[in-house]
Image 1 (cartoon, helix red, strand yellow):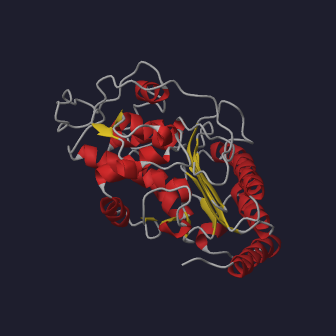
Image 2 (tube, rainbow, N blue to C red):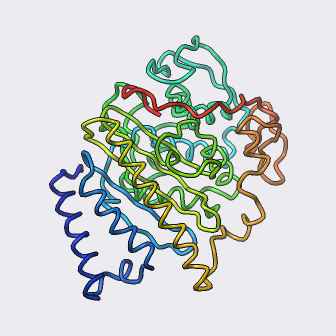
Length: 373
């Protein structure tokens, strides 16, 4: 159920009052906030202040991967997902590959019902145009190609996507239809808390399996729409993220790989008077989070607390291995450890077999409101 702007304003005012009162009086906050170090307590208050003056309805969650500290504003609100719903689609594709139902080399053909005229290179493709699963994954995430997304939804099944999200405990994430630039905004739903849970599982190499987690992060790193969370941050910073735009909705969710202090950030906005106001809000939240985690990294090291490490089995893999080179247009190949070569029928576990991938393009400008990156 959507929450109203009045609900949001009342909640934020309560949070702001609690944060200020606890600062000046020492009054005890709930455990999660009471034990929060100074830089993150300041972030919590900064988010409350920013949200108090936010356009439309907003929901935010930011989480430190090293310590698990998190701060949020309406993180469980059921919000329009727009194209951030493509992350769950990607998850289901990798889940079914892990089951051996097909591999990255499997070829799909564009069908008339797949095509969405609003956004993506495949919008103008002729019926019968061939693309591999690997190519469709890259187009779906890095270019936010709606036709590619609909082809993958047709492959894995919308029901299976929703069942997998439910099995993961994601209460607000639901794909109610194919992806359409002029589609019903109520048909694509999620929340910051659901997206943070998915991204954290990937970061810890626990989502499906170690190989799948790393491949999905590599694809997200290739994002071409970088005008929201990345825009105010230092150039060259590694960010694995996915944006979403639909009608009056603007979202961005991802992992920011700040040196020694990676954090997850999910910002969702809707009922915006203008998309430009939404962009400003998301960029403001991104700046606040980055500055806070820079200070927090110094605090954590001063306290002698360990930094972030994924599960031991995944720790040996760098963030950008040859797998990422494959997704970003290099010469690497992506295959799970000890995988056999893919069979013609696509029944083996996933592998690329040298699937050609186009070179990464420069960062793309924000698209019009009718498009859905």
